[in-house]
Image (cartoon, rainbow, N blue to C red):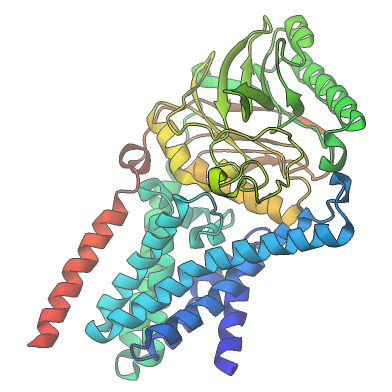
Length: 499
């Protein structure tokens, strides 16, 4: 029991350290106990999986504790007890869903450990964790990559994302913790593995530093001044008359203020206009008066259903382009496996129509060229941003709601966009309903971040870029390379052991 308690505690520590705590250095040691205990299982796969599950529950549960902010949902007509039951059930499900990664990883390491020398175990463990995270990013639910424990505080190591996305950062964290665990369990070679951990940590940070110090060229020909509106319309009133009227008031006044400041375009949050557009977009008359392009968030009709969309509205009031949210929130915005579960599951969203997922190959074009777009949950999936950057996207626009969640969720969401800006080497502009809105440069530095739960307007100059990082050009190429290398090293190690 002491062993399980200690593992749960270290997992909890790993889950607490992401934004807004930003104790990134603890991530480089918090996985060491799990490594150690898994190595001591002596090949007992089930026991190792149980240990991994305990650590994963601590990590995922702490990191995703903000999900309980769904409660209270009494404004939707739910009772207090029903509301809290739904919120806790969602938190528990997502926690267990993420903890499966650690359980599978621990079981796999316990299985291969007796067959491999320590250095090969460490390599295999780092690759296995990165591979499992990649698999999870292909699913509808994902948020808690080990890499995001470094964002936004450790910008140097985050620049490894320019090489192959979060994969290299995650693998580095697992490998350094593995070396430290090996130094703890192998007394004879303790200094060798401690030296390896230090060398790996410093070497990777030096590599990241070499990318971090690259100058950003501010080409005035590519300058663009974007206005941001944070409407601050609470979800509990957003869909009712009071909220709709307050939203129209705030977004119109915010748009006018920014247009008078001379911005080139204005960005609003996800669902800023929470109703279905039919003929003329909201603010059309004001946009025609002020002659400033607007990116407006609302719902759009789509094949007898609706999409959560970001629309480019031109100065003449016409719709120029449209981006549809790809990663919808399961149950809240759509029903997974709808033919099977549609009649059994009541949706949590007050939107009456079932939403369609946006297509992965969509291209969001603006009067200034292609843009990388993301709506809320999209930010947790790096491949969506990589694909749009590869298609020529010159800067990032993200629109989110973030209500009713607390500032912990807001900070983690902002941390995801910091990673996406670095990986694609693009300026990023965030507009949220309740916070944190912000502006991030290609090195991940936050130039401006709003206060939460306030109505805010802000203007910032960014620069369009056409550079291509290795990640943008080749995607997650390091993962298959690492898998191949670990197989070769493992095979050679096994042959040598047999001799």
